[in-house]
Image 1 (cartoon, rainbow, N blue to C red):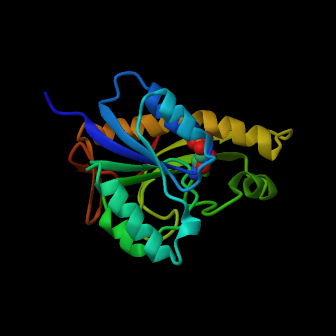
Image 2 (image 1 turned 135 degrees about the vertical axis):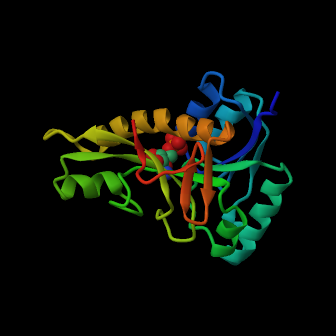
Length: 210
Ligand code: GRF
């Protein structure tokens, strides 16, 4: 039997995506640790309840991004993860950190990338009058929210949507697609190579839309 894929999950907030990973049926992963830059992140309690080790590494304790990222990498690597999962980790990451995890770090972003990189994606989608919005799981590369996209889910925007209602519907989809992408990686079906994503050994020319 292949051993479960070892994960370290990084969070800063409520941890609903972490919860979706913990709740996914038969996901062949072992969450070794949940690490937060904020001691008040709600996701830490979710992890504790599930008996998963938690660590807090406050960014305020470091004088530079590079110093923080280097301590973070040391902490992560102590758990020897096969995959690092960014699940609402609200930090810009230094190039050196990202390069250390190339091909073994995923992020979820609340937009249909390449649209609306960065923050306030729901508000921006509403302001732009988009008929569709959604979320994307991608491999992390040094350019913010610009790594190769693995899977996306679309959400129709209604005329009555507020930022809150739209965000809630997008989050429901996040909780579907993140476990899916993690499953593909854990099962060895998904890999990042020099020319992009390989899925089942074949180049992925378009993100999977579910
Ligand atoms: C999600 O909306 C995710 O797309 C974004 O941060 C949020 C995290 O939510 N990157 P949660 O902490 O998983 O509930």
